[in-house]
Length: 202
Length: 130
Image 1: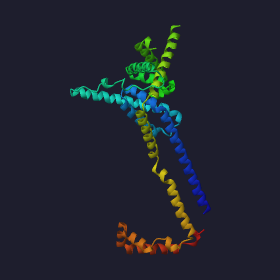
Image 2 (image 1 turned 30 degrees about the vertical axis):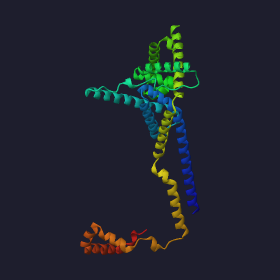
Image 3 (image 1 turned 180 degrees about the vertical axis):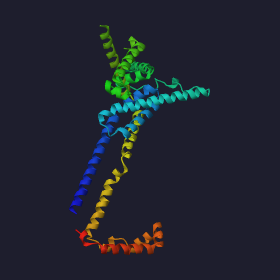
C-alpha cells in the first residue's frame, strides 16, 4: 500500500515537472516570437509588397515553428523561423507567377504590383520633426523599392544579414545554402543597392 | 586602398539601412501589432494542442487508478468465487465457438483418447521419475 502511494506520488511529481517544463517552453517561445515578429513582418512585407499577405506568411511561419520545432534548442529558433518564412515567401512568389500566367491566358491582367502604395503602407516613425520623419520615410521607401527589385537570393541574404542581424552561418541555415553563397549574395546585393540608390541616398 | 574604402562605404550603407529599417519596425501601427499578437497566440495554441492527448489526461487518469487500487486494497481480500468468472458462462462461451461444434461430433473419440492417455500415465515405469 505504501509502495503504491509512493509510486503515485512520484508519478504526480514527474507529471508536474513535465507540465512546468512545457509551460516554460511556451513562455520561452512566446518571448521569442514577440521579439522577432515585427521585424519578420517588415521583411516579408518588403518581399511580397503587401502587408496582409505578409501577416499571413508570418503567422504561418509562427505556427509551423511551434508545431514542428518547439522542442528544439531556442538558439536554433531564429534561423529555423526565417527558413520557414523564406520558404513561405518563395511559395507565395511561385503561386503569384502561376496566377498571373492563368490571368494572362484568360485575357485578364494579373494582379500586378501597381496597387502597392508605398506611401499608404509606410510606417509611422515617432519622436522626430515632420521634416525628419518625411526624410526617413522617403529614404526607407526608396530602399524598400530597391531591395524589392533585387534577385530573390540577394534580397534574402541582404535582409537577413542587415535587417535581422543574423550571422553568416545563421543566414546560410535560413537560406539553405553554404556560407560562401551567403557572402557572395550579400556582397552583390550591397553593391547593387549602392549603385541603384546613388550617393545622395547615403 | 580602394577595396578598403569600398568596405567602409558598404558598412556605412548597411548601418544606415538597418537604422531606417528599425525605425520602420518601431512605427508599425496598433492594428498591425494586434494582428501579429493574435497570430502569435494562435501559434502558441498550436503548441498546446500539439501535445499527445494522454499527457493532458495523465494526472486525472493517475488519480482515478490510484483511487481504484486504494478501494480494492482497503476493502480487504475478496472471496475467490467473486474473482473467478462464472464457470457455466465460460463453458457456454467455449461451446459456442465454431471449433467446439466439430469437437462435439467426435465427442466419443476424444473421451476414448482421454481415457487412453490416463491409462498410459498410470502404466509409466517408476525408474523415469526423478
